[in-house]
Image (tube, rainbow, N blue to C red; front, side, top):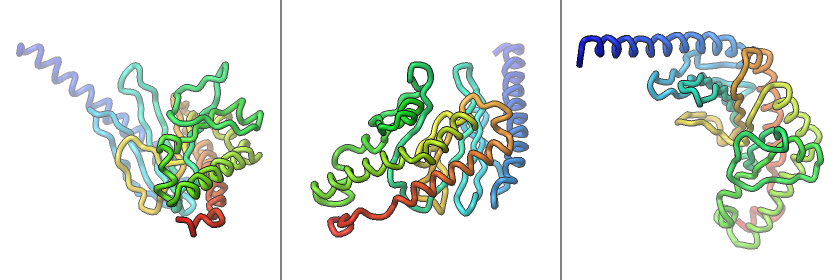
Length: 252
């Protein structure tokens, strides 16, 4: 290796480390501000390495629930900036869905594998694309969980009707409109979704939202606090549907 090649290599590594260091300082300052929204937090930001380019994150507690805030700035031209929020639930969610806002001509930014849900509500179906992700588990999912074929089919039908009723509630539509139209959310799912390994000790499931190509305004404490409040309200609403179907426990 020629001397000037070594100089370029060292300079490139130094520049990479400087970008990683300054980005970390910027993220740490942001999380310190957002930490004021939480009941408690670890106080330590988990930093992604400078090579693999993961998400810097901080964990804590919000209204008695596990919470995770994660931030990623693009490392490559084709990548998008991403701000992720996960709010945990101590129970399993009664349904597993993803929600995206429809754009021009009804298209969405990222197609999710699963079954599209039609609620029959004109505003919900026109403005939001809801995917039932449990369709990926196959027909045997409910039978494995709850026993006999007829009982599992009846329960699956009940859960699908319950999901449709929940999506048709005026308050569900209002919270989706607040999150997607006012707060800048691009994607929501009723599960803990994170590209890596995390521990939320008090949570079996939860709600995850993602903001892509976020602006500084969207990361302000007021906006993030509003998102957390809407996520918590959606969780409480979904958790209220967790009563067992009559006869389901006896057939399991």
